[in-house]
Image 1 (cartoon, rainbow, N blue to C red):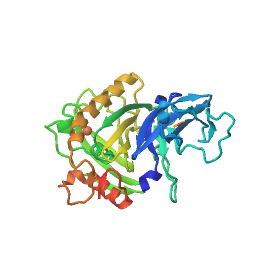
Image 2 (image 1 turned 180 degrees about the horizontal axis):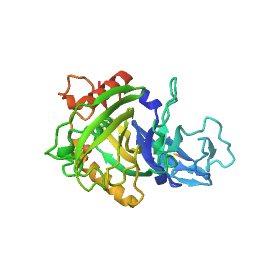
Image 3 (image 1 turned 90 degrees about the vertical axis):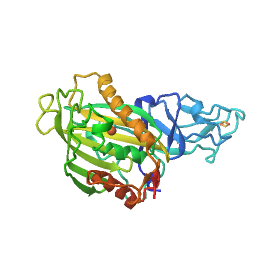
Image 4 (image 1 turned 60 degrees about the horizontal axis):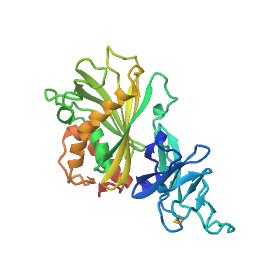
Length: 332
Ligand code: FES
Ligand code: FE
């Protein structure tokens, strides 16, 4: 399964501490924890002794200790101690099942299986790194726990025609519902839409009045997308500088997900809480519709739903998932 060989976000990096925590990815149960060096780990949340949850355990001496019989495991997964048999030295078969974990863009990312062929980067958008482009402030919002499949969340993120209804007074208006034609093209790992124009009463916390905003949307991985836009004229606009918001989605089960947004904004004046509040409001407006959509899994058969020309980016996204062989969270 291709999606097991790709990186997926599983938690905000700062939420992973020395107390193990549980997370879920592509139907796998994970225990996330940090060792004494501060390195984050993602393991199968199941002790190989009697199957207890590692996420109920604790970190002791830089090792993960199972809550049931206290077996200890080193950061690489090797069992180092079995307290009931103090003189026994566990062999290489005594080890936990581990996955690859990495930190980037304020998140912890996990890959369940090694790539077949060319390895893909975590995300094709280095602008979101904390150290990239000092004129843009990086903030992360979420987690948003959603009873919707990951592809449904991405498709909604790419959809402009709902602004005037779901986000009326914020991202759109019922008086300006037309979506002018825009361009859609495939990219190596997704699709990109350019020249997307939307009339917005209040596209950011700085917008004083309504304006036509130009967006670029890009799907960078099956469950990730980025929008880029020019900051509001008259507020914080700098020639040539575009702001971005990424939607990072963790496919938890076929029909449930966790989402976060990563912002790169030309705004150093607002407190984090204000930027996050704005995203919380927008996502809160999307949630009931997302959770209402049927079928829960995104149908990839072109005949399954009706489409309009305003939906070109979403039909291109569905086609991409179909051609890439993505199977989780979709109906094929
Ligand atoms: Fe983990 Fe026994 S189940 S130590
Ligand atoms: Fe929305």
